[in-house]
Image (cartoon, rainbow, N blue to C red; front, side, top):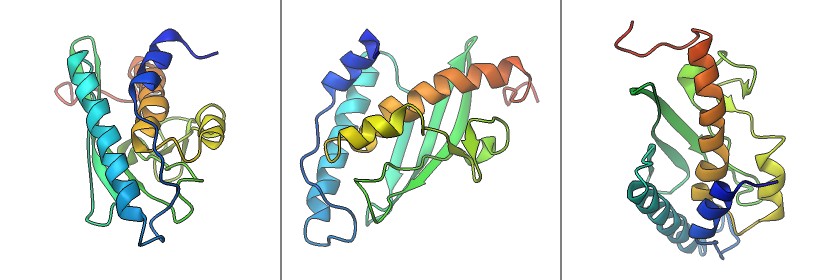
Length: 165
């Protein structure tokens, strides 16, 4: 039930090999390097397809991630802070991506602005441990969530473009 665009995106992302989380001090740097390589490839592919929609960076340990994501609608750019932590059970547990400024504005969100990925993304993640990483969470989690939720929030007048305020 995956569309052609999703299959194309997924096939262009490298699969990760190292099965460890941040508690594994010996192997975590290897996993983190794989994560960054996959993110770099994903961002590069997005730019080549004129689909640049996020920036991410992490703390030195690679356990806290933060940045910006955006959605363009009617030639207006809606930009949001994005953040998440890498759980100690990672990669078994998918990152819980949060958009704090949208907290409480949609039913498809948990406390703290964490986006709801339970029904669609988390089962896919579970079937692909340890091959999926942060780039996959962005491509198959946050990206589709933004594409569905932001236009709805705009149409309902729940969020407005910053210039309109």
